[in-house]
Image (cartoon, rainbow, N blue to C red; front, side, top):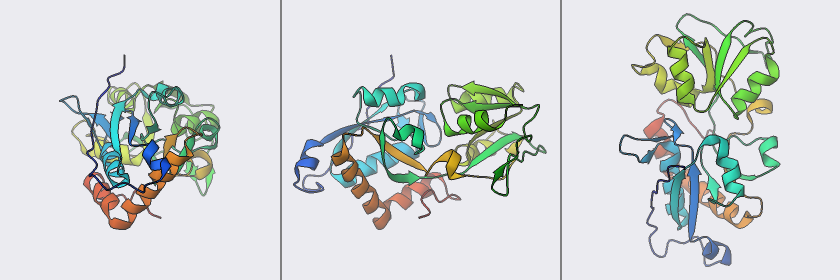
Length: 265
């Protein structure tokens, strides 16, 4: 049974987007996040959902004038849960890809971070150079990655001579990295930048340049919605645009990532 965690956002009376039937139909929206991808989304020691995605979702709903409930859902079941109407939207750093768009729709992108390899200090990985894959860059290496992600697809599709180990969460991949069971891991730089600065990441570093080719990693992370919910998509896109215009998005960005602009354009 999933750990369902509620984060209520009290929308002020009269702050509704409009008096349209669309907004009236979405007075409350249930949003799923993974809860295991810090600092974007995670569960703190008190069992509460925290992170950039959670703060962003709360502010998005406040801006849209709707009440939101945020719940935790394991990554592997997050799209099936949306299609089964367990919740109405996904805010969990889900990359917008053509494959995913065959089953669900997305809002405009709300964040983007390039990928990077992390391994022991002194190691060097050059899997992407001059706009192309370096096919033998990972030969003989054991690389850990969270399954069902754009990062896992990139590794599986391009490096047949590497041993790719799949993990249910990025945290578990990092545990195996520090235990010496894998040589490196590939993930969002926004997730790994804080880890390499932490006590747990001592002795580890970025061992590649950051890279984000759209053909592999998509257009950035969007809010996942069901295809039939185009009215909700319009509401969320409008609220996102307002957050970018009034500076509230940038405040949340800087709270978690002083060195990374998650929405450069």
